[in-house]
Amino acid sequence: MVRGGAPLRGEVSVSGSKNSTLALMAGALLASGETRLRNVPRLRDVDTMLEILRALGVRAEWDAEEPRCVRIDASSIASPEAPYDLVRKMRASFLVLGPLVARCGMARVSEPGGCAIGVRPIDQHLKGLAALGAKVRLDHGYVEASTTGLRGGRVAFDVSTVNGTQNVMMAAVLAPGESVLENAAREPEVVELATVLNRMGADVRNAGSDRIAVRGVAALRGVHHDVAGDRIEAGTLLAAAMITRGDVRVTGVDTSTLESTLDKLRETGAELEVEPSAVRARSLGALQGVRAVTAPFPGFPTDMQAQLLAVLTLAKGSSVVTERVFENRFMHVPELQRMGADIALSDRSAHVRGVARLSGAPVMATDLRASAGLIVAALAADGETSVSRVYHIDRGYERIEEKLRSLGAEIRREG
Ligand code: EPZ
Image (tube, rainbow, N blue to C red; front, side, top):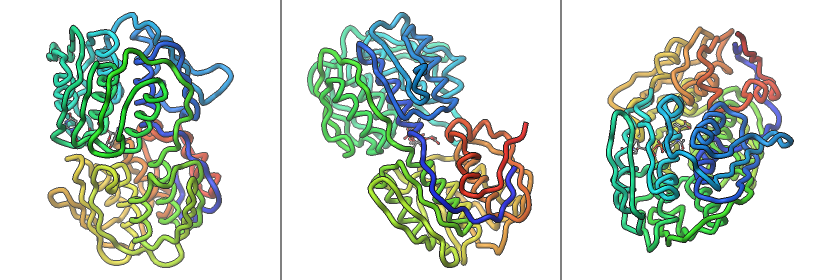
């Protein structure tokens, strides 16, 4: 339940990155000995990944003393099979495929299937593993991959895929010889994974560019790592500050990973003070309409599209937001229209005409970022909004209502 209207003010720290954490947890499968990840967000998706790792026969748990620390020891992997019941809960589970093939010479992982935002095929993951010498086949809803020994190879991705790049990079680190990943994803979560793999003993170069080179090594060992702050959570909190005409300083995030988001917020009229690991956003004047097109990093992130769209519903003039990464990521639009937003969808764009105010209404979350967009809108709406199906938001935001309340928002969880 959100009662809109209060300008958000104050300072808030983001949690560790969900998407980085999930990839790093899969990466721990490559190493013998214990990997400790700190600054891990307490999220349902992290618990699901812990369940998956345990299903593989790996020791994986939250540290008893340190609340945001997970400990993973994959010195032995009993069964390289990730079951449908767990994988269907979270697509990112598919990130265990590459490490399992590399460590065990075989893997059986349930196909993740589509989701609310798109068909989300896995062809690039499979193409990459095949290029490294794995035999890959689909069997009764499972991907079965096996090899007598991976070897270095050239992988040219047809699309820039984050998890595809991560999966293939993780397989390549134990594949003797040189591998080259072309048209690789450049997201910070790819770079953080490569950094940790190198600390484990791997030899990955040029991560962050679209051409990653990997020289295979014999073995990796566990390390300790502090997960980076969540750049999408940071962007979400800044969008909330903007739409409520507030003044918020967000800390604990590497602001160099936020540039395209900050550029877009600046265009809407945000006054920003940017430091290496903190950013203050103030909304002084009227919100301005903008054009935005989602794209792979360093372009404007698709995971910020819904939150930006919410801000633009109250901006002067017209805006156009084009979704180029996923084919069905405007599920939040009908819900924003219920709150009085003036949005027309055509092809892959949302055409927004700014309105003077939004009104609170019962709305329904359909996926993680759509629910974040609805909460951002609700914070500026007249009256009360009830956002249902918040389990979507709990997948990616840790205690979001507490963080927003600490900034002065009127928000509470019910039921
Ligand atoms: C990651 O998903 C993130 N998830 C997503 O965040 C994020 O939206 C996405 O990257 C894009 O930034 C995690 O890291 C766990 P992609 P991923 O493969 O890797 C097509 C969130 O809200 N494609 O980069 O699955 C695909 O259909 C989530 O936190 C193929 O065609 O996304 C899409 O159109 C949602 N074949 C495009 O590439 C493939 O084999 C980009 O998807 C793989 C992808």
